[in-house]
Image (cartoon, rainbow, N blue to C red; front, side, top):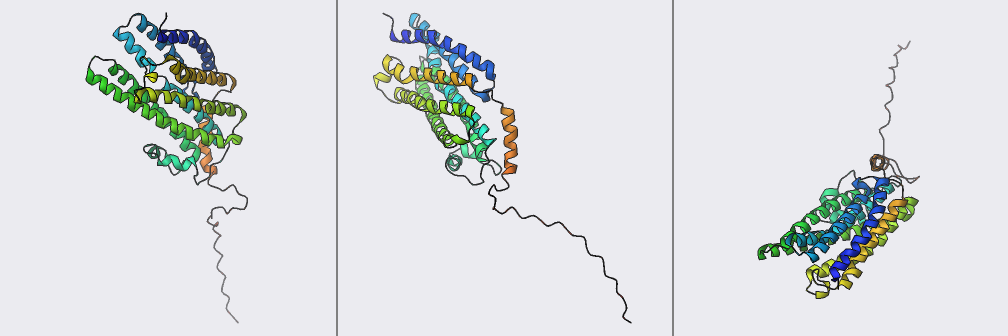
Length: 319
């Protein structure tokens, strides 16, 4: 009888190469630019294919290198998916900012984001519009996801070591990386909610992207929940080593696959993203925002044009 882990890995080796074909078409359509978001989708697909190969090899030949490779690649799934979701949201935000003026005062998510530690220091600026601040937040998210990815790799490497001290520090690194991803997911949720509130201002093509992200959000939540239960609890069902295969399929593998399929389908149907054009138009928006859009609102006072000094009146002597 084939072990459950090997069966799951074989299934991934069958399914994800087919998905990769669609992802390649998406990359041919949108390019390899990270701003488009689909670069991270291709990264995740390749990680799952290579990781499944290592998993099969680890079952057949459980050497240290095979086990380490399988562990590392298995822990790398969440970061690319979150980075892809963030890049797609950034595309929506940039597109919205080219059509909608931002008011000078902030409300909702735009007043919450500057209060988040570190993020607030990076996005607050006197000349930044609400949309550009949200766009900067997503750039911070990509940095955080990259840091989390590095922590996952180093932590998984140390966790498979023979040294007990390295195993302990590896578990701590993995927990820190996961907590960082939970924070990133929370920020993405707020950004997606804000974009959803501006749904009527978004063009038809970008609406499909927003709907895809909104569908992916609960799937990501379930995937993160499984990771939390696997890392922070001792429940055997959610153990990443000898846990329940059904629980892993229902709470992790299925969610990842659905997200990849949804994003791939959207990538094949939406127009190509031009980040340079969005950035150019966004730079012009703060100039337009200096003047109110209300018809009866007062405009800033301007200095009156100077009038020429009157010629001196000649004095006539009275006779």
